Amino acid sequence: MAQGTKRKREPHYLSPGQKLLLVLVLVVLFAVSSTVFLDLTRMDDEQTPDPSEGSGWENSVMAYVIAKEGETTAPFYNEGFAMVDQYARGTNVELESWEPYVTESNEEYYHVYLDGQFGYFRCENVTDDRIELLQENRIYVRTTAHLLQEPGEIGLGSLVTKGTLLRLIGYDYFRDDGTVNMYQVKLGDEQGWIRSEYVSFSYDDAMSNWTNDTYSYYSHRDRGDSYGGGNAADLDYFPHAKGDFAAKGNVMPDNVYALYIPSYETSPDKIQQYLDMAEGTEINAFVVTICDDGNMAYYSPFLEQQGLMGAYTYQASMEEFGQAMKMLQDAGYYTIARFICFRDAQLAQFRPEWSIADSTGNIMYLNDSYWPSPFCRDVWQLRVGMAVEAVDNFGFNEVQFDYVRFPDWIKSYMDEGTIDLRNTMGESMAQAVQRFLTYACDVLHEHDVYVGADVFGEVANEYVAAYGQYWPAISTVVDVISGMPYPALFGGYNASDGYYYYYEHPYDTLLQWSQHVLARQNECSSPAVVRTWLQTWDIYGYKYDSVAISKQMAGLYDGGVPQGYMLWHGQGTLFVADDIHDAIRIDYQEEYEKAQAQGEDLGEYMKLPDLYN
Image 1 (tube, rainbow, N blue to C red):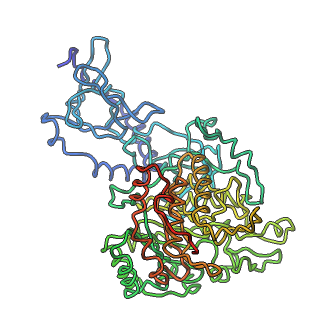
Image 2: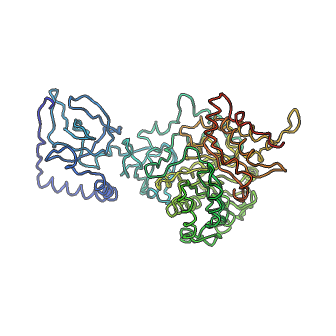
Image 3: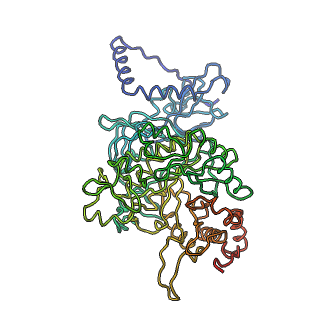
């Protein structure tokens, strides 16, 4: 036993007037934070262990670790009063009693039992009141984002911009490191929730921009706004928390090899054909389109509740679609739900007030479609609500958003003032894209699902694209970023030895593209997994078969972004099953490791034939 003496807590007796004042204070406190208090009480019931299962002390009491203001952990001392560990605030701890141990230097500690060992915490680091665990009372917005009305729900509150002061009134829970997951805050008369990563405890820190030894915010700032999609300086580059749901049973494979299934090929007989196609190959995932420009894979009660089911045709009932998805999941495949976001002619015509229009109010036909505006928050909530429905009902591992952008070639309309983008908040296109994905991650991460976004191959370049996509701004936010560097879509140019067509050079095209991607990834504070869409459709008589796929994969590996592929064919990969079968039998990671052991690039090691001999 350590030297020192025990000092009992002295009782404090209140006068009748003090008692009345205390009652009034408690009533007011309950009125202000009843929701949080009730939630904390529920958490106590779930988290507080039975004292009898711990130290064996007869009259022990349970309490919580509390940190000093501005800190998230507290020091733990062994029986000799040497600090041996740090524990996160909110950690349950068993006390021998509320009688402090007083050292010879007059420092007070509580004797505790924690994680199978006896030791001490300073008295100021222990409390029996969960309300006291939250030392903060006001915070400043560091990352512009929308408040959520409730964690995990789609309801949007106000947009709170960088530097905004928020009054803190509660929280949902502490993470294992002692940080808060989401704060409940007040802005004027509005209450809402915001992730802890988006706030700071000081105004100066909130207004700063993220930097480290190898990266500077100014490299983004200096890129400006070249094509009308937005100024790179106005985007957020602070780290965003990535999804990690392995403990919940949702494990993302290190390398995802995925086949694509259109929404109209999700009947059980078609799914069985896809399963047969994947049998004996390296395929471990499927991308299943849920919503595709006016078409739904199933009848959606959520859309019906929103009065919008009439805008869509659908392929199956919820029950039928659920049976089909269960076939994939029972076979052990990772499943990805794909949603087209902002190219949706049917929705645009059904809700013209949400859609991009001309100066007279008539919706505009752009890039072969009508477009709900990416600025419109009603569209945001609709798409994320659809994703929540799919995840909660069918157990998807990941949600993938496609067409997360504005239509191409609209700058001339913007310059002429002949287009109405429904931009009520004065945002750039790139800000709208990044903020939508931030909102989607905030909601869907609470449903234990990963979030990905598709981007054009062009976005690997250093500029903000004209349609609002900027690689570092997107990769920093989402869990998975999926470029679409289809060689067929790269423009040719006059080379010294003739005209150079990229689709004739799948390896070189993907190699060069990957090198650009690696540079963009290095500019991110919290880069996403790079999982790339590969071309499987023929172009100008050139077959994109197994050889072409392997060449694209070798280019990805040799360029430094070897985190898997998804095979794209607009009619579904079942349409080209015979052409690509040899490619999907290859474990590219294993082949790459063999090539590295021999000091060769994968493209050289695989000795792939010329594509068009």
